[in-house]
Length: 331
Image (cartoon, rainbow, N blue to C red):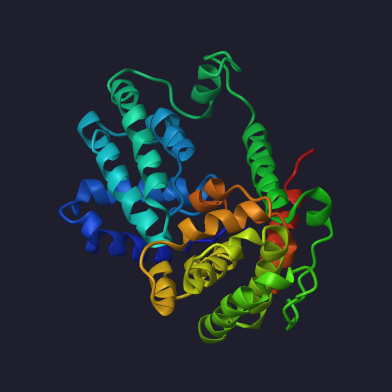
């Protein structure tokens, strides 16, 4: 589901950033204006979440989006890379992204900054035609019809929904009924890891009861059962049950946009388990076990490729988005 950010949501996020150690010393009119642009990019493009930053998002922002979209003088635009670095650090801390992934994203800022600074100092076309001309898809003096861009964006958003649930057929048949209060399925879990899995399960159940709800508990139970069946070696290795349980809860919460839609942070989740650091590190082998790219997941797509882990409300939002995008399709 594409998250919906209200103006109040964006104002609250901006206030939280500037009040944080990451935004210290950056709170002035210019950088507040630039942050509004970063939030505009984050909410209206890509996955629709301004806390999700990857090297690809950085490339789009610096190589095309700001130079093409933001009409301002050079001194104003020149402040964007440093502000972006601070906001990436803030966003990844909020979402519990592993340090190496944050460094990769910051390295992308370093990579694209020289070209960005050169671009903002040269005369350039603006608007959608500029991007297509740069790609060699359109004569620089031509302009595409508005329907071209509307259709292209709809395709991107529909593809995002397909990846979230496992394909076009799954998206077309998606229902909105709540996940049932489902017991843990031990059938495919090897006997020799039962004790270890039971320890993790007890922590997962307690966390979901206290912090989440029945539907997310079912999603977490399903995920734990499938991970244990697919790669029981994870539970044969020595590790803290709290770390595995926190990772399971983080994965299903991320898939359902819990950290954006509820008054809960990743730090509060890890504090509940009494662990330090980010659960995304421990989540890596768990996601790999069920065939999900852990780096893509941590960067922010939050897609498990199945509706089995999604709550009824979350699927209802996806159905509404699906139907709206298809209703708008001019083809």
